[in-house]
Amino acid sequence: MKILQEFKQFAMRGSVIDLAVGVIIGGAFGKIVSSLVSDILMPPIGLLIGGVNFTDLAIPLKKAVVDASGAVITPAVAINYGNFLQATFDFLIVAWAIFLFIKLINNMHRKKEEPAAPAEPAAPPADIQLLTEIRDLLKEQEKK
Image (cartoon, rainbow, N blue to C red; front, side, top):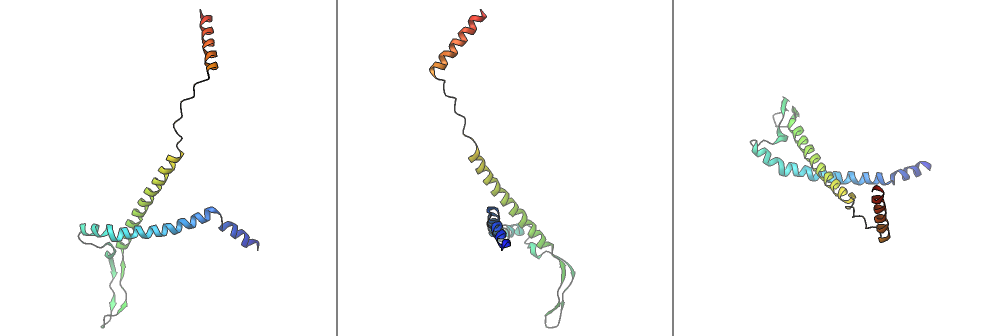
């Protein structure tokens, strides 16, 4: 029973719950950014470089073996560097988006933490001002 209690204490810590929420939101955010990359950014980039679809780029090492009916007996072997390029673009865009998001959050925190401009110190009470003037006058008389 003690192990279950320890696990409950561990799982209910704020940091574990925050991490779980972060993973869930990160997964959803990753899907959004992946869609942004594959559906919005990559088609114009592919068009600019001559209609090339990055996921179709590959270096064939061995062609597929097909029987007379057209069924694939042995699949082709290829280095699919286009998928690698696509994953790299996805990563770079996700990393950039997260960087900008974290930068925005940090800027918001800095604005909250910045202390207000220090107000001018309040003028000393009249009796303190009078005593200060007396002191200054006495210092001047001593110099003479």
